[in-house]
Length: 364
Image 1 (cartoon, rainbow, N blue to C red):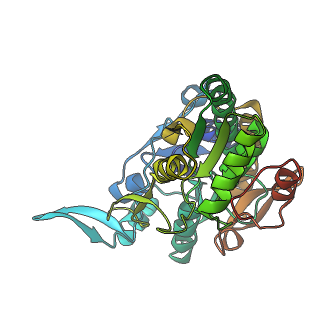
Image 2 (image 1 turned 45 degrees about the horizontal axis):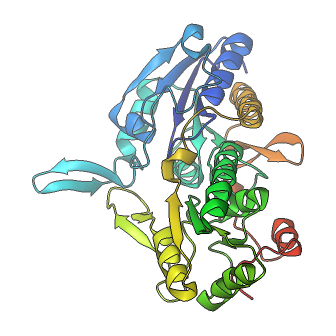
């Protein structure tokens, strides 16, 4: 696009493997094919509100495709419409969207590329309503963003979780224990479902499928009676316990979604021990799923997304997000991505396959 000279890029929300691959792809493509100047905005939308950013050169984005995290920094507490500002009695929540747009204009950005999940895409959609030219890149280990088949970061998280299940199998078998492994995912069970299926978990508990304690006990006891003296339970952090619902670790008012999930693994382990009389242990993977180098799949997908985002910015196709449909990467309206969360359906093929090989979801 003639006259397109300055592109801002930020990485918002929780970090995940593959973010640096996107920053690299957007920057290298935009520099080489459009002669663009790239402004790296630091710490997600916090940097947009605070005016914290720096120009990126080719050397800044070379040799980073294999690195986890993000060279720009990120934050899940930078929503411009719900921004924490220091007050006399502690942080106060303010609408700082005007400041965000002031810095967008001060940097003379022709386009802002935002890399993030549903929260980031929602904010991007609102910024577009204020006049910002925005292009989105979908990122989340949770894989819960609508309008794309997959988000980068998910494959790496599933790989790490599957390896953990593999390792727990050996110690569970040796000690004849029930091993409960808690994984991230918030309100979607994709990580638990996919890693549980890949790792051969005996029970998978996810937010989308209600379960009963009796069904969980029955599965564990049945295995024990058939000489299988250990069981693996893979539970998503957002799984709803029959008696208490979601298990919330804490609340953080500085976040748009104040709930911090965590602790369901401990609840499940305690109840299984009480209900079966079998020795039970729990492992919480937590942020291990976010860290480390991205898998080859995620590096390639992140690069494909980044290249498309640079072309969308260069062509002036604003308001779109890169998406994977089948084997094709193509643009979709950001509005489509934020219309709903993508959650596991009861008839999803992975659920049916898991049931076919004897995996329990605690619902029968």
